[in-house]
Length: 222
Image (cartoon, rainbow, N blue to C red; front, side, top):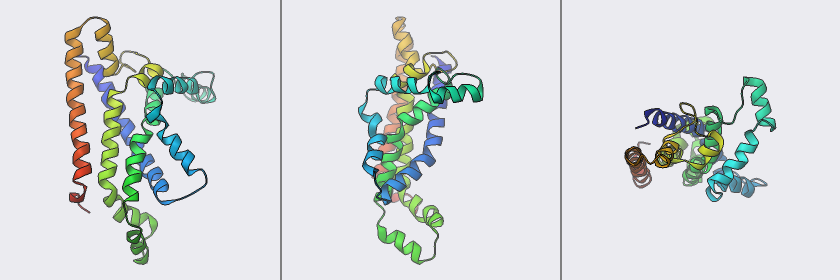
């Protein structure tokens, strides 16, 4: 068992979820409540990772983060090292690739809140910020939790993006998915089977949580 690769995968998934939580809430709420020019294009861009092959998406991210790109040059000048093939670059790529898994469920959760509820909150004198904290977030909580679980599970098992942007640097960007691939390439079937079983168990648990959040949302405290 490559415990270092597992820890990197868990670290990557946790950081991705924590960063995507406020991004998903803000973006999902805006897309749910507001109509503006170009909204369809924004939603299409958010959903783009769902239809592009991970290797294709990873290639464009590799180019965008590379040393010749403005982003890569700015990162190099600021931090003194390149962005690609580092954990930071892998984290940024993971955040971008998981945007639809975080934003779309939250958008649906905010859309399910009746406009009358928000109007009643305004009539009661609640500011938009207090209405968000006291009313909207509790009502959308099942969708928010579903989005976070989906993002966590998807990050944990991602292979193509990790390989393209992060490579397979032990202790830095080598995740458990890459470690499984390396064990198969080395004909270590026992090691690959052990890590695959662990990843399968974690994935089953996270998928079960998604169904729990989506089917029993009305039982969450409001």
